[in-house]
Image (spheres, rainbow, N blue to C red):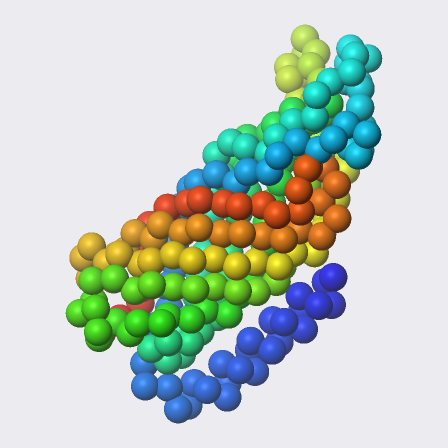
Length: 213
């Protein structure tokens, strides 16, 4: 999986080198946002565990939910084409059969703007993304004592290949400052911790575009 992601990164880099000399416009954007990613609970017979390690009782499998953070960056080497990177993570740990868990998603994407900035007079730009990446589930063991208080220690990590697609719109409010509502859908291969390999996400980001005319 790491080799595939590395090859994808090299492809984007070489594509940028090939197209950039002929590009009429270049821009670089960064954004920070928040939203939620969801996935249904897995059937208990398909889950990685079935009993609470603290009580020994049979627990229901959790759904993926909660608040997620998002960081993104993209480079447009023409009015319509570019590439970018996104990472999303759950702000707080969820409970998974007595363990803490925190999912993370990493995406490398090709970016397409079907409408140029000139046609919308700089007010908004629709954006379509598509690419590959990795999902990671970090598992934590939580304990407490009188001396140290409550502590959470990472003890296991599960990684999965993913395919990503997203649709959003950059709404420019002043100069290069924009708000970007976005809907993402990720296919996570063999996502056995939850009930579906498809993980939708809904978010809003605040960002800034450098080099915008």
